[in-house]
Image 1 (cartoon, rainbow, N blue to C red):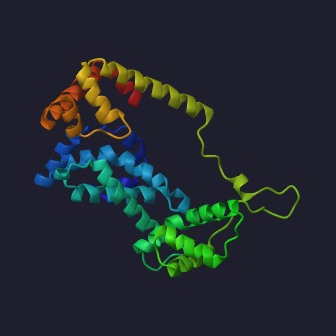
Image 2: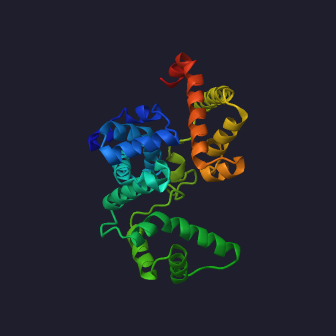
Length: 292
């Protein structure tokens, strides 16, 4: 998989239609790539998580970089993560990949920002991506207390909050101030002038998109309920705790609660997913129509 593939305009559409890997399949693919350098396994693993890379890339559009370039850098970070991932550590690949994807995008933004040209240390990265937000928060907190911070006091507080030297804060503020422009500034001095922020395109979902999203969500929820109906009570419990909770339970903790070994819980989980896939396969024509 080459870097140019990540910039293809149809990538986002293909990524959103990619399969969702369960933990067992993900682990098998990771082992196949690490131990046998199976390129098909690598391609399948990366394709499944490209939607994650695209989602993270979209969060950095405000820095002015072309979206295609951001996606390409995110994809390269995803490939590095796949190459360095150790499946024996018991960590989900998506959790591990987030760091590599974010690091790749941030390095690209730092390299291409018009003002920041001197290196990309961890201190500079922290300041570049967080300083303005931290400054605004500290100034709001001081204002609530009736305190007006001097520039030196603000620099000191930012340095303590982010964990960097004060001189780095001063330097980064100087670099960024040249390109900063308040969106709340007036376009001109006329009485009927408006702020620049009023000229920005509203990126929120349209009513039709909102309705379509709600209908899609309802359909997906219906399929999930039907698939869960094919499971027995213990299997449903394992799937809920492992996949449907905000913080997934570990195999060990479920084994302790159910009086089973970790391996037995894993087997039950794999069996439950197989039943759910079979349930979805029984209505595959409708599912495929929905996804295409």
